[in-house]
Image (cartoon, rainbow, N blue to C red):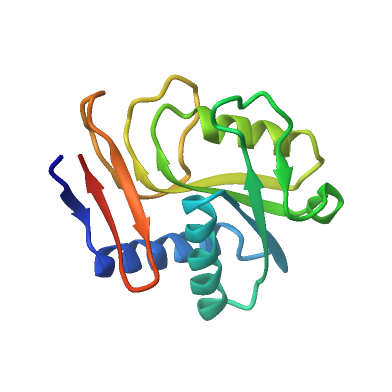
Length: 165
């Protein structure tokens, strides 16, 4: 199967910085925000966004890993921090690719069960094939692809890239 690179490492870094600036502009009045990344690649992206945000602002960033069973998304969602830790806080839910919207909408649903200040979503790649009425507030790139194509984001120790197959 052929891999068509759609984002190089340098382009991903640029997109992450741009998303961090957009988050900062949106939450400029906040003292603390929660960056919640959906396991696995979404959480890796959340860490990178949190690092970039920390470099450009004095907002305190609390990271949260969100574990969703993608085969059975109605199962209870687990987070690395307790729900009390994001009560009355601004939250950004992060995933690597927004495809059908299922994973993101189940993640959003979890956070709606807690009284938070504001909830926004961020993705590196938005595919425009949504089944659910969910959108990314912050996105690196939007792509119109066929339903048969697959986008994968790779975050490895020595390289990062996104490809279409």
